[in-house]
Length: 447
Ligand code: HAM
Image 1 (cartoon, rainbow, N blue to C red):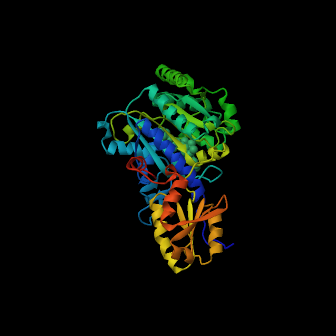
Image 2: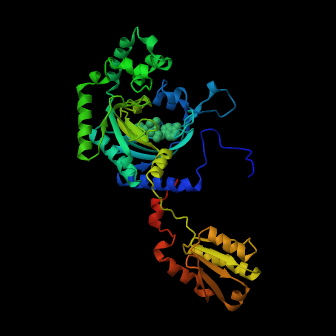
Image 3: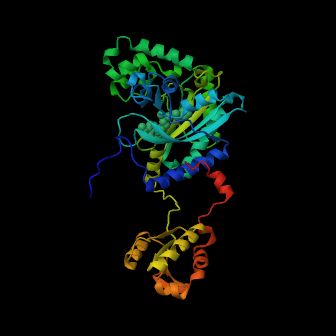
């Protein structure tokens, strides 16, 4: 083995071909379900003015305080950095909504996005510095049915990918911004005199973002919280009714859920509904996806008050779930035909033969650089080709070619002119990798 001089930066990895099969499969499911429900694709840039994230996600969230990848257009120091790599899609999409005057469009405007996100977190299993999200956003209307329908689309995607059974949906209502402010004040009052018993991080949070104490993993904090006021006590009657209606609609759609009053989520823009999908066994660690309502976000970007609700799933975590569930991903990477040749004349003819087979939609490989027939046949085996077409000096002269069925281990000589029609017949028209304009439209956003 040679020693690599370079490796991927910490927390990043190559998406190797095997995982790409999963990625492509997930993207197909997302695109399909999104299209069915009227969502349109949007791609905000990978980096934005850092203020988009600082303002949108919140100054005192982990994502902004600790995890933003800052980008400068010149070699200035961090304080001068103008831009940041996107840690998520929602803030950028809402910035775009305002920038492009989408309030004029029929509401709600529904978007989906798929792509890389960046968070400078401490890497561990399921937590990376570059990862992929698929994201759904419904902007412009507020109604419990929209929250329930969004969750429904997510369950359809997870069900298509065959790991829904492994998930449990946790849902909560964190009230309006006013409800939360009143609660945060009450929580601070409650902790007066008790701060010393809080772990340092939570003591800090008490001043900056007290709601985050609720989902703190610290035992001491949880014990102290047992007799603290609860967020529920501060929810307005409207928030409570809103929540009850969302749950009622979920029941109607036959979506099981767990009401979880500790669920607060790590981004500041949420109002009312918040939810996450957890692995039934491992729980909150490595949530597969999460989302919620953000009725004040568009206004933060200069738009008129416009409600929204959305969700993002972590694709690496989804792939892990699929592997755990034993999902075999169908793929189109099989090799149908391996073309082997011997002699300069044969080699030349094979250039056209390979090209014509590919044009027909036959996945064709050849090892024109290999001299020996034996090594070519070994390659055909390694690539698990279904058929081999073999052209030697004799065959060129006689206008024939040898067709070998690799599995059956049988071969026969056929006329050269019949090579392509015979292969097409053996594979079957449906197995050919061709595309029509219709497919092309569907696959335009292949990335
Ligand atoms: P989030 O909970 O921060 O929400 O991220 C959504 C999902 O992205 C997580 O559940 C997880 O699967 C994945 N994820 C997050 N960070 C990492 C990481 N470092 N490595 C691997 N996967 C990760 C949002 O991003 C919101 N924008 C969701 C949303 C959309 N809310 C409203 N609309």
